[in-house]
Amino acid sequence: MYKDNSLIPSEAIRLAALGLLWQRERSYADLAREIRHFVGRIAGPSLELLGPSLELFKIEGLIEAIDPTPPAESQMMRLTADGRTELRRLMTTRLRGPMGEVNKLIIAFKVHFLGSLSAEDQRGQLDLMIEACDKELGRLRDLRAYEPVATDGGHLPSWLDLEIAEIGARRAWFEGLKAGIDG
Figure 1 (spheres, rainbow, N blue to C red):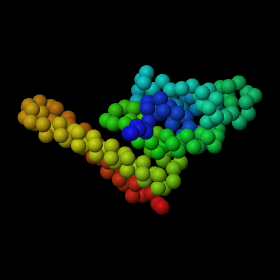
Figure 2: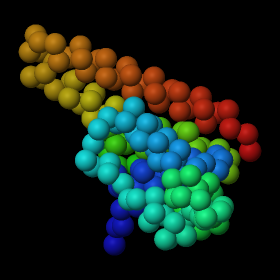
Figure 3: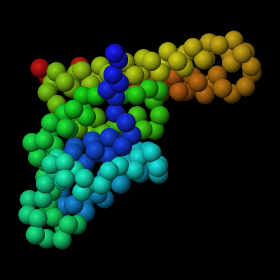
Figure 4: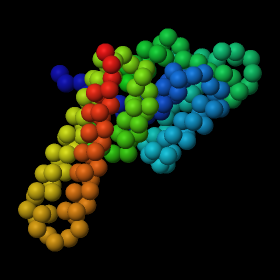
C-alpha cells in the first residue's frame, strides 16, 4: 500500500519552529514573531498555514523552556532530543506537487535549515527538489506544446516560457548547491 509521506501545510509551521530553534535558542515571543514574519513574506496570509500553537510543541516534548519561571512570552526556548528527531523527519520528507505557495514555503525552510542534515541527507533532499522541478517543467512544457496554446496568438505561450525559465534556473541552482556539498 502506498503511503504519502509528504509534508502537509500545517507541518510547515512545525518545520519553521523546530528549525529556528535548531539554529539557536530564542524567546517564545521571538520564535512566534520569526515564524509569522517568514511565513508572511514567503507565502503571504493563508488560512491553510495556520499551524499548531507553540504550546502544543511544548506538550509534545519537542521544545522546552530553559527556565519556566518567567512569563510564557519571555521564556527562552530550546529544541529537545525529540524535537531534533522530528526536525530530521520533517526535513527528509517529500514535497507535494505541483509547486504552489505552500511548497515554496516548505522548500524555503528546507533550504534554510539544510545544514541540520548530514551531507548524504542534504544531497537526497536536493535530489527531491530537482525532481519536483523536473515534474513541474514537464507539466508546463507539455502545456506549452499543446496545439491550442501554441497557436492561439495570445500571451500565454510567452508567460509559460517565463515560468519554464524560472523553474529551470531554480533547478540549476539546486544542482549547483548539491555539487557544493562535501561528503
